[in-house]
Length: 324
Image 1 (cartoon, rainbow, N blue to C red):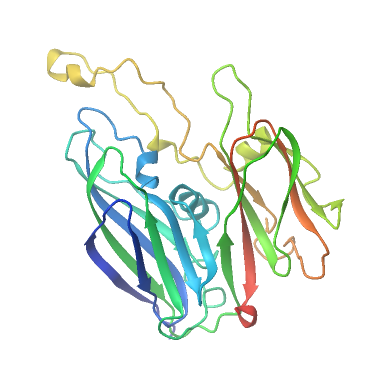
Image 2 (cartoon, rainbow, N blue to C red):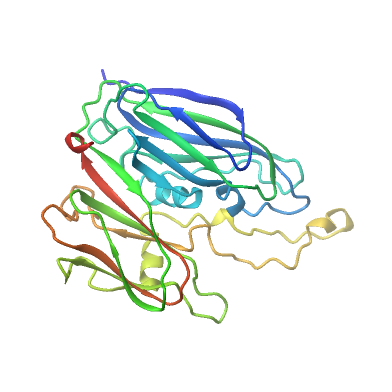
């Protein structure tokens, strides 16, 4: 009978802004890690801006002998959890009062299919696999933060492969086309991308105007895909996580005057409005996987509408035998 072990690695530990923490991860094959944060809202009579929750985390890394298996910011971690691992947290106690005690859970997936004995991180030796979290220099609208870190081990698993996701960061020097090299050697199932600027009001500027995939300088899979289509097709498997944006009820009467807010823009963009998802393995069976072995060049070509930051996260499917 197959088993999984869901256990606590860190229990209600106080989190201090500007610090870096490291934890040894379990030695059994590892499916995923949950990072749960409990905190008090430091904002009265209004909703906490949801992005401030993700912005508490500057970077999360899983390192095997110092080499990156997982590396990204808090907001990108949220995006990858939704797009790649099909995991979306339920925010708690979002009532809009000062000192409300709230919590939110992020996922660090080492597989696209949670609990899969075929795709998870292989067994390691104590001290080889490390979780490292870098917290932002300050927290906004949030105080009294504590963390709970929980791991899901698959002790009976003999994985064939695992998921590696590390971030490529680029700031264009000018507008127009630029090429971002993608890693060669492992299959790639998806790309998750972030562009700083998206259309707002009557302004159409977007940092990522379109994307193309070039293998050995020939267009493959995505000959050209425009921002608008990319943004809308990112929700092909699920509704947008829009409940994290503004949601206001108009209430009459003096007793509710503090909630009678006419300044909010309704509706608002969902929390992943700046993220784009480009899947290759669209059927989930490897039929359309981007195979990179033997290529001499592989890059995503982006047309930059401005010179703001771009992040690209390739989702590499790494053979367990190639872990090193």
